[in-house]
Image 1: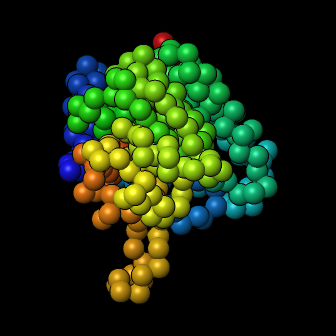
Image 2: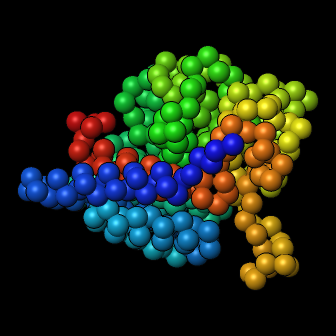
Length: 293
């Protein structure tokens, strides 16, 4: 068993980005600029956005954090999105999800200009990805692809089973793993919470990607010997034996599944680290106008 170490891989990506930014500055160009809109005070969102700001500082990007109160109206948020779309000094921006319930997330996502959609959520970018055209990829799937590529994990002809069908992870992951590329060329099965006899599918997986949001859902009896296991889940579980009163766990019962795996991501320290690194990669591409010249 070998760990797919997201921390080590993300650090390598960030080092590459730092070199690229230094080269841009040496050529007289400005550094890439990433902005983030945060509505409300959701704790997890605050932590995640804070991680993005730190990553920008590390690689030499400019960053802007735009805080808006919980009671911000949909119209006010859409106005701010339009303002950032028109701001030539900003290469890419994100609207941190989830948004307050009174705001239509789909409407906001579709309001972001595709060429600045470094989260890869806009229908234009999703459609370009599905057609195999250059696009901004959703950060988490992009991070998983980077892990598979950098650890040189064979994917061609493999059976990839995905648990979860969200628009953020499961659906785009299924497209990327079946595309005619590397990583890719897999036979892909998408399963979810209502799949009958789910374990029959997971036991046949050469590559198992789990994004269900149920802590320690996948157990050893659900995994084939030698499978590559990618755990996207991250949940705080109450644990009075820990100083903070909780522990962080994924969707896979790591201690059981790891011995059967050829490769496995830890939680924390796996896919989560790669998500922010991938967002930085998208921002660099936006600044270079590699996707939308």
